Length: 482
Image 1 (cartoon, helix red, strand yellow):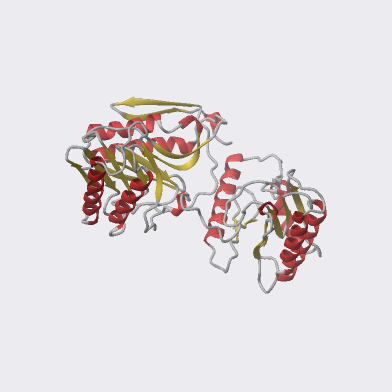
Image 2 (cartoon, helix red, strand yellow):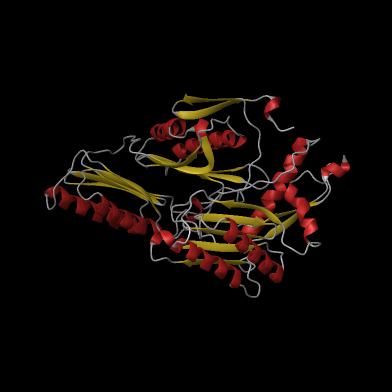
């Protein structure tokens, strides 16, 4: 059994030991897309130029290189890159890239996308933009399907080691080599194994992705808006004049330090803005956010009698009807990753439901109608949650609004993400596995989540009690690993 246990992690682990004794790069897998072109086209000529550029643009310690060949026809333009493993020598990296480009040239010459993996490098080209973009397909998996005597201990070992390795690779500051290795200590008879993680370097998140909107955000981040189409007005009428006055009043009060303010003009147009807690936002960001929101909503909804716009740091709304002190649950904006696989609820979902329930109660009881909560999931991951209501809501109305949101607007049975947000006009909630707010009377360490191994719950139920969602969970031993 001892000899088998050294092979259990993944097949690629055993390959590393053999590299030093080989003279040639070790081929793993290639993928040529089924979307093809005809022979002797401009695309084929451009592909040859691209692959030649990748194999020849090599100097010093280059472990990553990307380039683009622009065609006369946009459909003939091609993007390409190579990446070598961080511990591979410069000469061996060059040889690996050369072999990979030659293979793609011979086997994928008509395909609009091709990728090949060697143990030491990867080369990828596509007609679609692939730079600074997280892509998960095409993919290939190599694994060892041997039996594990103690599955729970083994999965814990894999989970902890891979998470730590991935986190170190992502945080690496050595040039552009996002690379790390980690060795797991002996656990229950398992021998030491070295794990490698090499994400594509130089990834730049898009503006609306979660990580761009973090605790370090110093600029307003637009999320969404909604313009009501049922009623509209013509330019240069009285309502438009009053609306411009309303926007000016809202912006003025935001720049003077208010985090929540509602007003009306001539009993004709009513407006409100809500910023995150003053301890949470950098100085002046609320004012900048409200000014940006006023400008954008005026531009995007210039003929609507009512509209709402959401930024990560603020919300602004106006209407021809008085909505003060009322719970409004529509229109709604959400960013949630859902799945149609219908999996049973995970351990994360259990923790999430409980955490959101707690932060909803905390928010309703707060004078500012604002609350945050951190929940430690394991040694590497912490769940961060934030909830907020407009400050004109009563305690019960705030809790009720958040209860409706948690109970009806989060698709618990299809929730496929470890982060997301839902916004109503009267309340909102956000949750992430990274810290996106300043901790106030909270303790907890932010850490990035990469993998989740957890139990599956056998039953899940959601009960509404006084407007607050309460999770009821039942499990049996067969739902756990082991």
